Image (cartoon, rainbow over all chains, first blue to last red; front, side, top):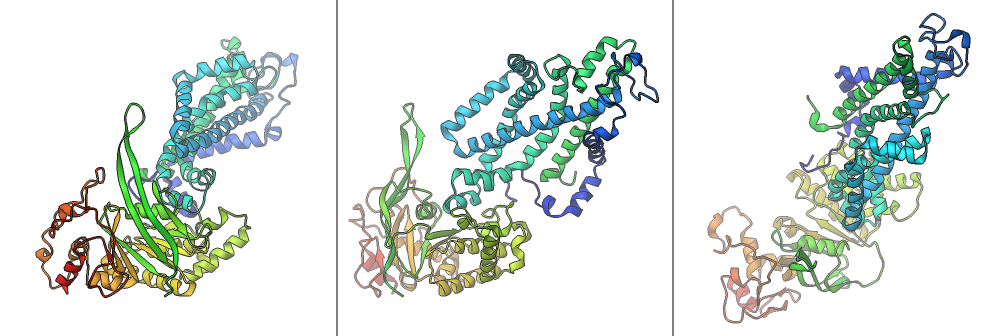
Length: 293
Length: 321
């Protein structure tokens, strides 16, 4: 591979599944990350069957009950089963994470690649806009946006996605700048491709690996941020079960009923850690320069 | 061979601005092509030779419409688009690593018209067989092929749009010597079968000698000599052609036996020399070289279409014979 090539995956990773599994097996942390994410995804997918109670069923006689055989994670201040709420809350938290990353990554990839391909004034203007967004701390911007749009989970997601776009734009643009100079792109223009076709057939495909790594690493962060927004009351609203919101309410009872905040908090920790481990593993797999480490 | 021009370049010049002053005006220009006149004839193999920086690549870019001439024109005799395709030097980087081979081969087709996947695969399979690959291989990715096979894929891609002219930009210089001959033979077979016209850009004189009908020698963005391959190589009329041919190592001749000018450098193309562009490096300089030279026939030649951009061409040819 030429020295100035973009950071592309060793194409081996696509065609040779056996070799891929071999390399994953060699990295125990990646395996751990995959197992953690699979666990989370199983709970998300089969929440109605894995939950023991209706997450919103109120039972005032069993208020703030400690963990027991009937309520594995205990109950909250209106007697709702915390285990069931954590299971259903996962749907929301993980869903928000995916939504944010897919929107930010998708928009960022297209804008970044276009910016890199077109160059010139379009590129300059786009990059300066991104610099402005980047220059303000992202949590502050998210809070401001979410507060301005009104406190709801959807607005929080939108705000989080907007704040994350610049990272993907920069990454995609850097890749596009390198790929643009490859002879196969020059060839595509000779064969009659438009800028859009070059983006679709060549630049997007080859710019993908680092974007996927970034997205995987970002999932954990997005889930954390969604929880943080819910914690300060700008995300999911009562009575919706959501991890951050549960930690937030549980905070009032933290001295006497530790389980209220602890279990949703642990769920956040578990999921974010899993995605980070997976992201690190994917990065090592896709980066040929890391080979043999 | 028919002598009907297919593509006529008339005074094609290309210059690129370098640097900008504070008003956005270019400070200087790089003069990449300085008036190229040539008529490409149907069915011929035209070799374009010259050292690095002489404008060969810019000429390829003009032919493939990547670069617009600053002056002059490029005209097809029977107008139609998409009649010219290209095969690049490095088959490693000219094939997208993330596309399957059938997509690569049919790229000139599916970019322009809507075709079903089955249709494209059938076309790719047919072309793969014509360039000596197996039909089953079209589902694979470029990294699964050797350099020679990749160049075959690149040739199949050039063929898919049914071009009249294929620009071959040093098609064999990135390949093993053993594979070079195979690719050249394939190109020769395809030319016979399909009546193709090739423009071969190369600095490998032996490839040009065996493959080309005509040769254009380029120097500083101009054609300095143009003629039948055998004539130009055996009886070079322009001093630069002699310099170029002397630079080719030959068995039985010492390396320093060539013209004594071999160590001089190509002058800058920012400020073009007045008069003959080769004057500063030429060992045969006389009065009259300070005037611009034109590409013209000269006395004492054996082929009537042998032209040189040198007023002493007739003397120099005799000097050799």
